[in-house]
Amino acid sequence: MVCAIRPGLTYYEETNNTLVWADRAKKIKNKPVINESPQDKIIRELQDENKRLKEYYASGAGAAVGNDPEMAKKLKEAQEEMEENQKQLDEMQRSWEDKLKGHEEAAKAAEAEEAAEKEARASGCPQLLNLNEDGMLDRKIFFDLSKLTKCKVGRKQLEGKEEPNIMLGGVGVQENHAIFETAGGKTTVKPLSNEAVPYIFINGEALKANKPVTLVANDRVIFGSGSVFLYRHEDEAANAKV
Image (cartoon, rainbow, N blue to C red):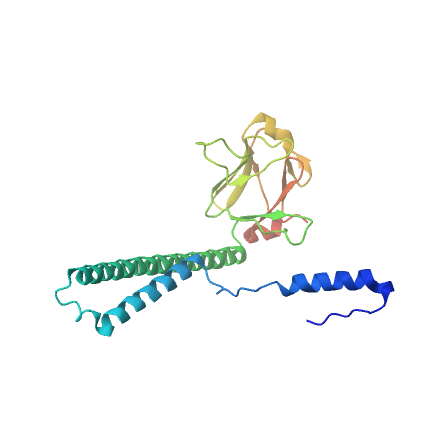
């Protein structure tokens, strides 16, 4: 460390502050540590301890026991400690392998789910996607209505009640708001209460009655004040609305 100071009396305060700072900086001591997780640290310490105990045995201490009961007791305790350390090591290694296996299985399941969704999106089957003015959020929510033939829409339920498939909030959204039902290649949307009727819009027009409405390709369905979904069905593309 190099500090710049001036001998002039005019700069006494600056020089003094610099020297005080330099004195404090000189007392700073860095203590390097190994960047490792707590589990890795425990494993390393157990391995080091076992290595020390093995070296102790290999040094000939066992042969020097003779008739010394105190030494024999220490050796027995050391051996028991080494065996216990090895058990802990084996258990931690198994735990790590189980976690790794769990992560790998979760990654494979996520890949399979992503591939299935990609295939479903391109299949032309009845499907539902969210619409959002933010391009990062647009069409990120996807439902394959050919498999999810009864898709419920509503608010978050109290504990113990079945949650809806599409959980929404906002003005006008009822606890049990609506349901999409798909059968025979056709999909309908039906209000689940009279209170939900004025808060369901198809292509900008509010429903007039508590009756199911058959959807056609490219229908925009709005719930509440701003949750918009696009209905897609390639098999009915000829009847699509723009």
